[in-house]
Image (cartoon, rainbow, N blue to C red; front, side, top):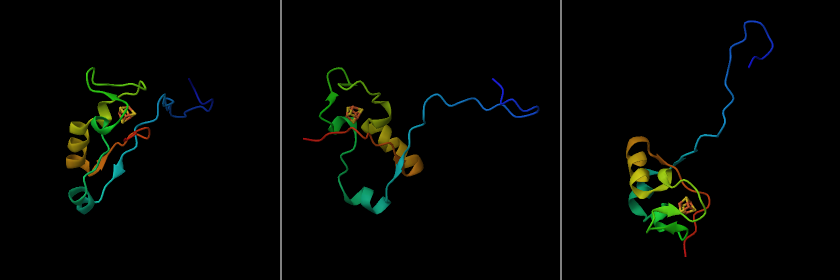
Length: 84
Ligand code: SF4
């Protein structure tokens, strides 16, 4: 695929957007009991460890969120999380 201009650099089109992570204030992270993981969500099937809506749970699992937060101070939060 070419942009049509001679010498132009090729930039492949991104097929899927990357996951946006939200920064959380460290004081808030330590003070509050965050319920933002799949394990807290009504749509999480703990037996099969999957999302009943069909979403990829990997970035929103508690262990992954804790790992991301410890490394970057940010976590990926699912926009479809539902807490009863
Ligand atoms: S809706 Fe989102 S938070 Fe809930 S189980 Fe599915 S992927 Fe996880």
